[in-house]
Length: 144
Image (cartoon, rainbow, N blue to C red; front, top):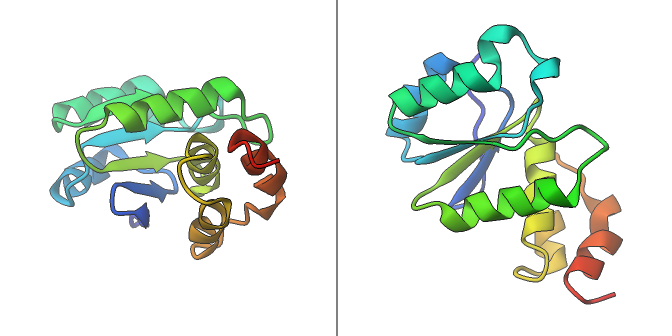
C-alpha cells in the first residue's frame, strides 16, 4: 500500500497506517517525529507500537505512541499530542487508520492557537469532516 501523506501544515502531516518499510522515505521527506495514534488491538502484530517504535528509532526518527480510540478521544490524548508537537524539533507525521483521528487530536491540541475555522477547514481539504467539533474547539479556545 503506498503512503498517503497529507500535510495539514508545513510542520504536521497525517496519514493512514504506515509500515516499517515506509520509514526511510518518511525520514527522507524531512519528517523527524512519528506519532502513532493507532491502538494495537486494531492492527496486525507486525504494525504494533513496539515494532513500529523499533523500526522508527532504527531510522533515527523520534517515535511517540498516543493511541486514540475512535469516538473515545480523551483530553489525555489531546495533551499528549500537543506535548509531542511542542517537543518536536522538525516536521511531524501522525498516523492512524485513515488520518482522521490524527487530524482531530491536532485540531483539539491547537484550539486557542489557531482560528476554529482553520482547525476545521484545513483537515476538510483532505476529506476529514471536523465540523461536529466546532463547539468543543470554541470551548477549548475560550470562545464559547
